[in-house]
Length: 408
Ligand SMILES: [Zn+2]
Image (cartoon, rainbow, N blue to C red; front, side):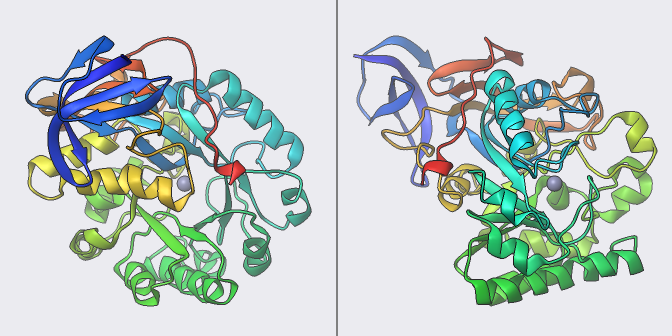
């Protein structure tokens, strides 16, 4: 007898099947086409489907001295609301997570306050000695300054120092000084350089938020198996024409031309990861020019809406938001399979809803998609077998635990 049995449609290795998922001790214990008995049961409706919880490898949760922008609590509630069960915490906080003491504080904060499972990041910028004293789940470097103002003065040294995969914000420092509007070349040159270094170091690298056709082409041409990358939802669904109409859409790297965006879509098959780069700010900070867009609560809905418009397959969504992130970042306890954590979401593929940021959990009470009707909605989120969000309500206390990448 399973503790919980979910009956309905789900995706198994790319195929939509109807069957039963048995969950015990927080893990997926059985997958079956024939009925399973369980103490509790959840039956999906005909237009609902069960998907793996999303793993978002790029999230800014602020907190510390920036609680007005977001806290671990508000941000991870937003994650569960959006169907994201694991978040990767970016370390360009205030104070920056780049020494042992702050890393310990960050870990403790997450242990107490996180509603979603999480990976802890550590910032590298000339602090290699400190890196040796921590075990982070991933490392982060900036090739040019973004929020937080810090960047790698010696990228090769910082990259060499990372003990696990290094996520890199690829915009070139010198070119940013020359072209503060950050045109394509700023990203393209940084990606070119990152790839050049990656080729010789042969160490795991993850290029964040690729937004330019040239940058993407360069990554694909170099075909380095140890280099992964992500594209954000806002770079897929917005262009610089949108930015011209709405200055709140300022983001680094900036929104690009229609041509760049269609190049991303044309190469969708080759993009391994879609992430949110959720970057909340207060309205006051946004009006003063802060760069960043909130995205946790709209990312999956935008993708489901795109699915309903025939732009992307469900299995593509699952691969880019769950299967590949788990593989790339070595998260052994995550993934839709027997023995893995039962992080699952129930999605209504047909429900149409209107984006109302005032109803979101994130403290950034605005959204680029405010007022937009999207088709496809997360109805329920389960974290390690427990229902933690249902019908827009977060259920229970913070129960997030750290992923086990640091053990590998
Ligand atoms: Zn970011």
